Image (cartoon, rainbow, N blue to C red; front, side, top):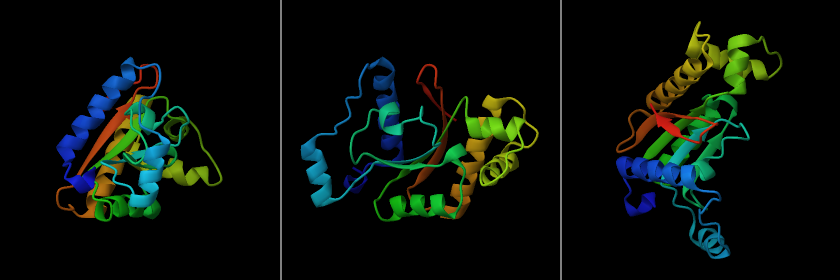
Length: 184
């Protein structure tokens, strides 16, 4: 869809409309048909937005925005933190696939944010919580901490991508209990 000229504002409106349908749906009406699988295999993908989301199993971007195959370029990492791999993936989607909208999608009840606020993780998890701690400082409220963490990732992407022409980067919080997405 981006290759067809969907700008960032149009993509954002499409995400908002998809989330509205999700809030009212019992099943996901996103197109996952064999015909679409074959078409995207033969003709490639044309996602209209990039979603950088947490790995949490309750946060499913294609479901949240009622999207089907080929509509969203989804990058998932615990705590939706940014490193060179995530930034490179976003860069690929914007430069090579033509995505004009990047959404950093955090959520409430985030285990990675909770660990950064309340625990002292070890091992490789510490890399994630250290990044989150840089973003949240002394914040102890987990929802506010999640918002600060999203804003930090948005800031990192804006700085890293250097204001790529026509690309908009926004933050959002997904509310697990009711399914609503709040754009920051």
